[in-house]
Image (cartoon, rainbow, N blue to C red; front, side):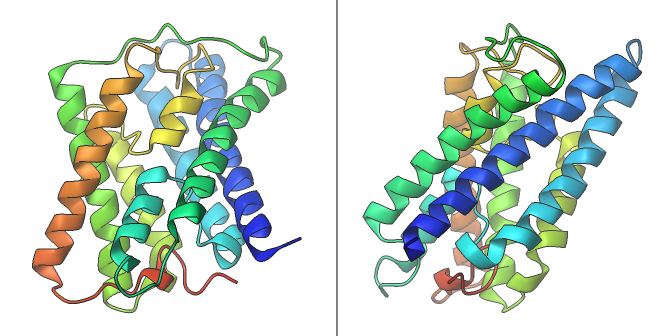
Length: 237
């Protein structure tokens, strides 16, 4: 398999398993704690933290462990002048693999819990507060990733990114989707973690805005070139 093929496979698998963790733990939480939404969120967020950290450690050396289109776009943007990071064709391929992986992850979670494989969520989430929460969640995620890369600490991404997402589950009103591929995947499960198709475009727009704000903030805090080849984990091969 080519180097790009291995990277795309890693991005597909990583995004699929990330969404599977999010959706599957949400289904389990509903079944185990049917009458306590706070406990459901705790169970969901805890599983996501551990799952995301393990996925970054396992697949990061192959693809960089983006698992997120806005991270891939930021990587491409950071390296466009120096010729580092993703090329434009690679960026398109990464995003395709991530979106398909997100959908596959929801389908897999549905199947594991004996639900119809493909569902369409009826969970409408859009409020002004939720959209602000998505801007904040995604801006923070991009800032964490690029701050570590800019200061030569990308090896800490597995812990730092997972910890940030875990905390953002609780301090943002939207519970921190912060990822267009994950948002798209969660459309296909009408469960605790799902999102209605009508809500997804606004969430994705908020995520794009948040990513731009986070990247701009890094430019102000850490002026100079960002080593795009070291995002999220160093030197994928």
